[in-house]
Image 1 (tube, rainbow, N blue to C red):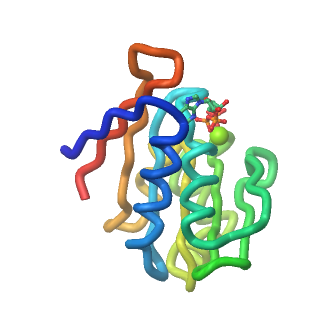
Image 2 (image 1 turned 90 degrees about the vertical axis):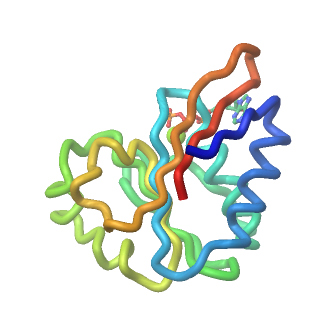
Length: 139
Ligand SMILES: Nc1ncnc2c1ncn2[C@@H]1O[C@H](COP(=O)(O)OP(=O)(O)OP(=O)(O)O)[C@@H](O)[C@H]1O
Ligand SMILES: [Mg+2]
């Protein structure tokens, strides 16, 4: 497992922008972490790294939002209201997950069985200080 100690939001931004540089079509990033650990915030900075100039807002009520102004399309999922991979399939998520863009899935643990095999999971945890976070990943 790789581990990164995030001291503040500026570190989150640096992590997101660096990660964005390595992304290619059909990559799927699954974010797993409790409420407020910063899944949407990290997504915002990955989007910035992709050159997206639209405002990223949480897609909780729509499940997925699409942004097309960057180097690659971004499909931002929040599956908080879903309960299984089958729910993902029912909303036609495969068109996004295997599509021309990058997918980022908040609460990926809820739909793990419906995500592509090569999904890159990132685990977000709270650190000691208010703005500290710990990111863990194994890709
Ligand atoms: N190092 C940090 N990285 C990311 N966010 C941070 C950091 N430090 C503080 N924050 C703050 O923590 C909050 C994270 O909220 P955010 O909506 O991104 O979390 P979330 O995991 O998407 O929550 P939810 O489970 O509701 O979807 C923001 O208010 C952000 O400013
Ligand atoms: Mg969120």
